[in-house]
Image 1 (cartoon, rainbow, N blue to C red):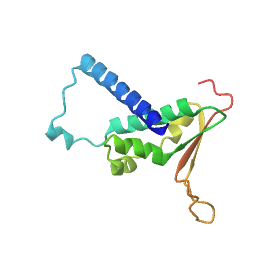
Image 2: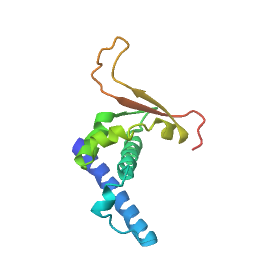
Image 3: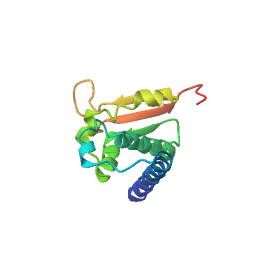
Amino acid sequence: MIEGFKADILRRVAEEQEKKSQKDQARTGTKPITPAEVSHRVKDTRGADTVIKIFNAYLEFGMSGSEVIVKKRDIIFFLKDEGFNLFQAEEEGWFDIEEEYRDAGWDVERDSGIDDNGQDKGTGITYTFRPRTGSTE
């Protein structure tokens, strides 16, 4: 079942990226980046956008009750599978999504996976999303 879910999410992300790429090229005449330009790029916004798209897919598919719990390791799994640089993802804060989702009407809690005594709970980092009460967004 997870393979089907994974395939569906990857397909959706790829379709979204392809649509955006086609629109960008049609509208602005965007040309492929040269090797010399690559070294001047500071951030890979495609990766940060992909993280949001993956979270969105989890929220869309996972909302059956009052909350959705997303494991960071699952997001990492998709990024790694797509060839993204995980060190860059951490350094550039791709996983720091809480404020964006709060602005969109969610209550978001990030759990480090460590209990109050410093013991690993075995869950890894998780994000719990709940629709904000009274949110109209």
